Length: 345
Ligand code: NDP
Ligand code: PYC
View 1 (cartoon, protein in one colour):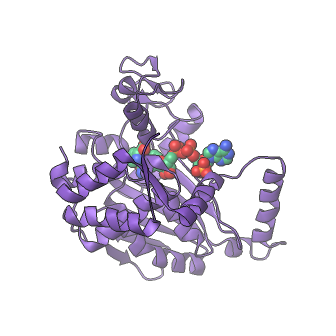
View 2: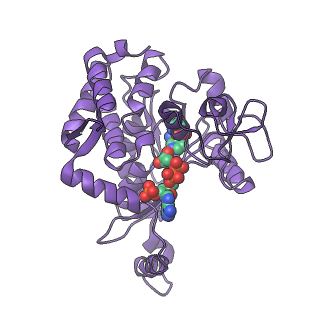
């Protein structure tokens, strides 16, 4: 039987934060990174859990992210656009700095945007979506990545895996949240398949010659495919436009040029939109939150599950029983804690 270790969420957080501090990150960066990575592990989102620590540290060691960055809020009075300059650090502390101002602006204006510039981003988007829905607002979050996905009908990497997430607040239950890569799967999934020696499902990727492949190595050397053919390709392009070009930050091909590799975490910008459902529905019949519940009940009533239900179920188990890690994962945490950046090849 495989040996496992179960840690409380708090104990895992302490370990991950210690690794980042030991690797030279300041308190702001280390704390925010530990929070998002442990949330991923807690919610059984392995592709963005502790497996990401090494990539973040590799990016620090390569000098492509500033481990001492102190993000700065750049707010213009009365504007619905709140900006945070991440100062070359990770996106997560920049988001934590800007989210309250975003919520305040959205409540006042009905709709507001948080623009994060010059950040390194490797995480899932749902923690950010949940931080907005916790404030009673709906959220739409997106960012580019680096060129690893061929546009529909194309054969070479150009678009990123460009994640796209949405959330709607619900009183008395967890929010409605979806969060997905606009590629068939997150690139982290390809890497996890490679490490496990497993083939990929058909339709995920093409090799360097543009031919369909189920081999993770060939997929990493070739290109991933957008979800839903031309539809996913168009949504991914929209993300390049809105969360890259429109906010004056890098697009996925520019990120790849800048980094020269996909082994480091990508540096670009991020766009977070917050909406006040009350403000939008004002003057119209019906309470938007009650009407949303009717819709969710109708979906569940057909036997369909709402997105994030798997995650919330995993979170309930982790909160109750702790987070279970394999012997290899524990060994990796020990190694990173002992050696810090020296553990990174
Ligand atoms: P998945 O395909 O695993 O899940 C996508 C969403 O669909 C989730 O909200 C999931 O909820 C929901 N879902 C899955 N199955 C069902 C179902 N049968 N019925 C209803 N809802 C369902 O996500 P991806 O692999 O595409 O992405 C994983 C993560 O990778 C995301 O968090 C994303 O933000 C992150 N990512 C980050 C990038 C970055 O650059 N920072 C780039 C690309 C991806 P549930 O979780 O409950 O299953
Ligand atoms: O899983 O596709 C991914 C990814 C890219 C950058 C961060 N996550």
